[in-house]
Structures are given as C-alpha cells and as structure tokens.
Length: 211
Length: 211
DNA sequence: TAGATTGTTAATCGATTAACAATC
DNA sequence: TAGATTGTTAATCGATTAACAATC
Image (tube, rainbow over all chains, first blue to last red):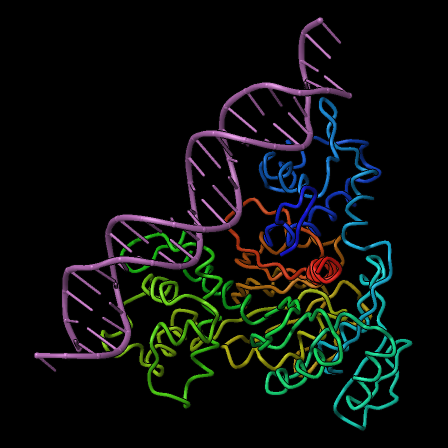
C-alpha cells in the first residue's frame, strides 16, 4: 500500500505507468520546453485527465495556462523512480536470458548496476560475462548480504524457481524480476514483476488468429 | 474486438489471463483429475467467480457438482490458444535479446516455430544460431511473404524500431512482440505485445524503495 | 436424493473520464 | 486582461465479486 502526495493510496496501475511517462519525457526532452496534459495524452494514447490525475499523486508539477515543464518533470520522475541513485541488482541463472540480461546496456541509463551473476552449474564458476564473473549459487546468500542487494533477476528453469526464491527472500532480497514461466510462491512483503514471454506470445497468437 | 461463445465481447484483460490458466492446467495435469473454480481460484490468487466468468466466454467447460475436468479443459485451452497447431515466427535483431530468443526452448512446447532471424549488420549474414541462419534485413519482406509469417519478435534499438515495424506491417505481419523500449507507432489492425524490461525494473525499484 | 458446483445475472468496487473552479 | 491549462471532485464506465437458480 504505497501512498502519494497527500497520503492517498497510489493504485498499482498508476505505478506501472510511471516508467512510461518517464520514457515520454525523456523523448520530449530537448525537443520542446513544455507540454500540456492534452498534448501528452495524445502522444501516449491516454486522456488528459488520466495524465493529470496520475501525476497529481506525486506532486503539483504543472502550472495553469502553461502546462508541464519537460526538464523539470523529467527530473521529478527520475527522482521518484530512483533513476539518479544507484540501484544494485544480481542475475540468477546464466542461461540464455541471464546472459542476455548481463549484456543489456539499458540498465546503466536508469541507475541499475549489475553486481553479480549466479548459476548452479559449478563448471561456469569464474567465467566472465562482461566485467562480472559467474559465481556459484552457494555464495549467493552471503553476497546479497555483504553487498546489500535489493533486486534479483530470476532467469532459471521453473522447477527450481520457488526454491531459489525462498533463498533470495531469506537473504534479504526485496524485489524480483521473474522470467521463469510460473507465478512465484511468495508470502511476505516482497514485490514481484513477471516477464512471461510465452504468455505474451500466446495472447498475441490468440488475437491474430481471431481477428 | 474479439467475440466469444455467445457473441459477447471478450475483454482484453481476460485474453491476457488465458495463458496463465493454461499454465495452471498444465501444472495440474497428472496431479488430479478435476478441479472446482473455488480451488483453482485459490491456487491462482483469483476469485471463483472470476475463474468461472473468464472460462465462460469460451464455452461451458464445467459440470455442476463436479467442477472442471483437467485433461479436457487443458485441451480446450490448448485449442483456443492454438498450441496444437504450428505458429511460425521470425526474430528481428540478432543482438543480446534476439540471440537469447533464438535459443529459448519454451517456444516449441507451445507450437511456436522459429523460421528466420534477421539483422541489419551484413557481417552476420549466414551465421548459424541453432539451426536457423541469420539473414540480412533486405531479405525480410520477401521471406515473410514466402513463408506466411504472422508474428515477429522485435529486438532492435528503439531508433530503428518504428521504421522496421512499418516494413513488417507492410509485409503482412499481424502481431509483434516488442522488446524495444518504446511504444510502436501502429495505425492499423495489428496486435502488439510489449516487453519493457526497464519499465518493469523501474516499477520494482519504485515499490521496494517506498515499501 | 442431498451436496456440490456450475453459468449467469445483479451488486459492488475501482479506474477512467468529464466537468469546473482556481489561477498562471 | 483573456486564454489556457492545471488539480480535483463528481459522473461514468468497465471489471470484479456476490448471489442464486439450474442441475449433475
């Protein structure tokens, strides 16, 4: 239950939209100085009301008769989303997806710092991916504690996912980006975001076959 | 506007949930013979009402006093989601994510068949990834037409994404799974599913920092 | 038969949009 | 000042849940 400006509860749908606002402000930055909720809504395919209400959970960023200053609002959103401060994360699983995430450049632009990669296969130990070396899963708990890691990207087969999740949570991980094709079994106050690639492909397939 | 059983419009939220139902039925298959909407809802973190209403858009799959037969419903969902028939797709962009998708095993279990990989870099031409070779983007339009490809996974930098999307749509692509960190500019009746990795990470970061 | 559980309609809840006073 | 546009409250819309007759 996350609260905004006046202690009002921010709906999760609004939170999920924030990074999208940031993308648009980043895109507009340099192009124009200011924008109205109406114009931004047109770009984003949203109503002006939604734009204004969404942003109003976090502050009074606009000005009547003027709109929103892009440099200012981009900065505000960057702060809200912790883009200016460094957020450390680890990758669990050095398979296809784990490796791709290792090389993924976009993390750096949004303050995310890869601190470690872990795999259960001892043969991979010490192998370098970029400038981070693969460690064995046995070292993971201590590493999370020593380096104060909050976020883990989980990219392992589904059969091991819940067991590893339990280990991560016990070690102090606060959020997981889950690529495994299942819903993780978590009881406590930990946040999960799922990327279910096959689910998306199936929804796509369903829609094009019915269209 | 996709219609179900009695010509009622199926809400997009329901469509997006279908693959998840399939995952649960696949998981239950072999474990038990039947399940009630109440029990399934418990597993999925949904209400019994939602389970029943969601499924009822597609048919009368249950039986009073009994529940839903798992083998039967799994089969029904597989048909609805075209899992039993082959769905061809291509990957556009042979970078980190494109390559990971090439090696992604889960596609095969759901009827997805990788037919081609394309990249703008001519040096990659002919290079084999698994049993599919990289082709140059120049060959893409003809390939899509010749092989009746409906779905493309877009894994290229955002600056080129809209231009390539236009090419894909003109060539006859019906659905795109977009990994590029922007909202594709599409006018016509084409379906897009987005995987915005950084957006998910930012939402995660926001939530754990506020918790 | 009695108990269980469906499919569907009605009630509720939450999210989106419209309206408007405030004000730059 | 007049026009534009905000932040917010009220109205609407859509999705979820509750209720229940039908029936296995």
